Image 1 (cartoon, rainbow, N blue to C red):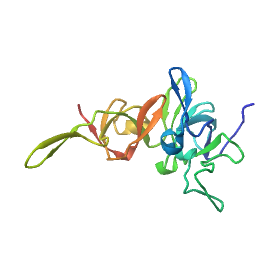
Image 2: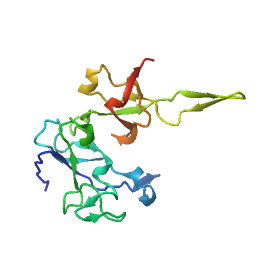
Image 3: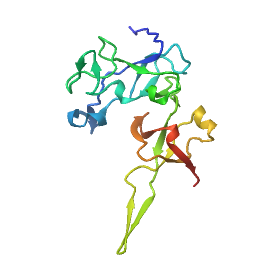
Image 4: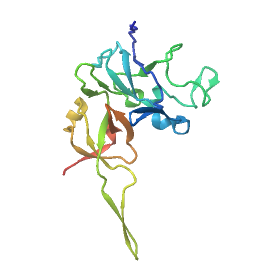
Length: 215
């Protein structure tokens, strides 16, 4: 039986596994020990069980929601009541007493740092739509960096992403005249790798885009 939930300010999502601890190799499912790199295997998505009644988000029950990893992992720095969490404790914004339901904060998109929901995929069309001020970029080839001294010239790749291609459009990108496929120059270390709809993309805050690059 599907639960019926009508949250006021939050999304409620169903996430079966907070950490993705299996991979498929040659058609066989294998388990990973994620204790030493839990961060790289965190879950970013879940099935929408409830949408915030206070806001018109365009998200429907049954859609897939993409969100911040703190939703399911939280951190050892977090405190529940008077209890400081340890590495072995269950973490994240789980609904009390439920092993698979979590809440995702949303304030209408006014403050991007208070909004943990980034995008959703429509259950009917498969279309991915952005929420708020967070966007996703496809990785771009990074330009070479020239270093020189009296003796030699050394050519090397940037160790961080400077550029990316906008993957999905949004109303806020439309206001800036930016469209999917446009190449943009971004703030150093502003990108954050996520898997969205099976693609390796980078999450970037809209204000971390410095300029559009004309190619």
